[in-house]
Image (cartoon, rainbow, N blue to C red; front, side, top):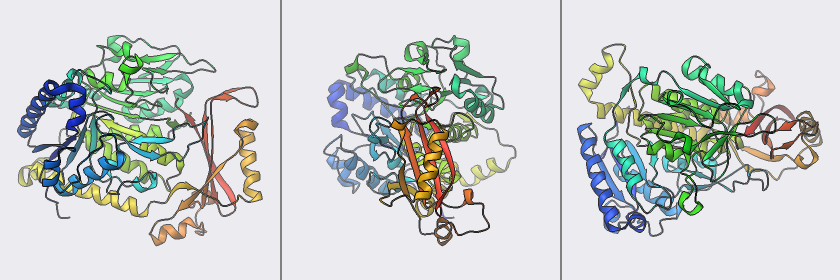
Amino acid sequence: MAARTALDDKLIVSNRSALRAKYGGAGLRQLNAALAALIVADKKRGLKTRVVYLDDARSMKALSAPVVTSAGSPRQNKLAVDALYAKLTPDYVVLLGATDVIPHQDVANPLYKPGDDDDRWVFSDVPYACDAGYSRDAAKFVGATRVVTRLPDLTGASDVAFLLSLLTTATGYARRPLADYANGFGLSAKVWKGSTGLSLSKLFGSATLLNTSPAAGPSFGAAQLSPRVHFINCHGTPSDPTFYGQTGKRYPEALTSKALNKRVKPGTLAAVECCYGAELYDSFALGLDLPICQTYLGQGAYAYMGSTTVAYGPSTGNGSADLICQYFLLRMFEGASIGRAGLEARQNYVQQAAQMDPVDLKTLMQFCVYGDASLHPVSVPSTTDAPKSLEAHFGERFLRSERRAGLAAAGRYLSRYKPTASQRSAQQTSAQVATQLAAIGRSLGLTADDAGFVTFAVKAKASPAAAIASRGIDARAPASARQALHYHVNVSTASDRADGQPRAGVAVVAKQVGNRIVAYRVYERHG
């Protein structure tokens, strides 16, 4: 494999006009000084870093990229980042600023159902990490190819101090031995104890680190929060600095921004499954404490992965949000940078799914990575001298470029061949399938108000093997393992079951092969 040539190792993109509007000329000068210090620190680490303001007409023209004239336009920002990436081919891309500086991309939520899943859009940074051009179709972005993260300042802020603190963290960061990340702080809603315990066992070899709400939280002692890995699987709600537990119909506070204050160790890595756990709401306009995600970053956390919208996962076993969060942490434990861990987590998530059903697509889109993409939190000793010899012979830059080329190829393969189900189908459901769906609803205790599955057609991709499998004609495979023709999705809000038992909001995904339902999965919403 031939290594591509990176003209810049790291590209930081932002919007000067938006930053000046927030912080004034003096604040912008402070910010530029902090960026200059980061560039110097990166150079000492062997990285050539460039800062580009997307609204700077002269700079953008020199780089053959379209200028952003409307800071809030997802389309303009996506096209600008794509053009810069094509010109500079950086190994790392960092979006500098919250969504009032560089917006999330507005991807259509395939699960959107007013009153049940109210997210009209999935606010996402994933499209910035993909070769595909601007689109609102999640299926266009199943093949991430780029290392992209965000360093988010405070939405609506007028004091540049918080953003300066994030840059200070990146400038002065240090790798730590794996032993520093050998223990974790685990927190789960009690109803998801089994699922979260399984995640912790995969990450740390034990579930003994788990705290459940109730009765744990929202306040934790410094010793409890001292581990530098935090894995959280609770409920979250929009514009809320609180995560919630659950048992029965009780949803007590499990963790708050206030309780985390001065309790998060520098270098912490957080993976958070909660709904809206990565939402960058305007705490100033709302008169609220900072979002929990920014409470972590403001105290020197290196990385935070979370969801901008309603997230889903099983109550037992692992799936959806559980998996993408696990993949992210595991890759960093192996020595990957924050940005590469995010890219590989996305690719691994797509690879593990035979097809991307609507829940899979929303999960992939909604999880953002906050932190400087180029930071390597964990220093992993080599088991042999071979990696060190390769690095000495070829140089870290060459090896990194080779890795990027391989990851880009893997992403393009997924984009080309992975079957997806993002578009609703107009095809009428057969009587046999309708009967099966009704039976599934009854078995889950769904009420009459929850009735109604929405049908999605699977779009087979170019691979002849995938096309054959998508028709379900591989007689050697069991029916449940064959590629589906359609998925049927029922999304319902938290309510009482028909049998009187409490139930969280759920997304039921039924798989149709041929003219029958062969399997179904139930996901609970984490908000």
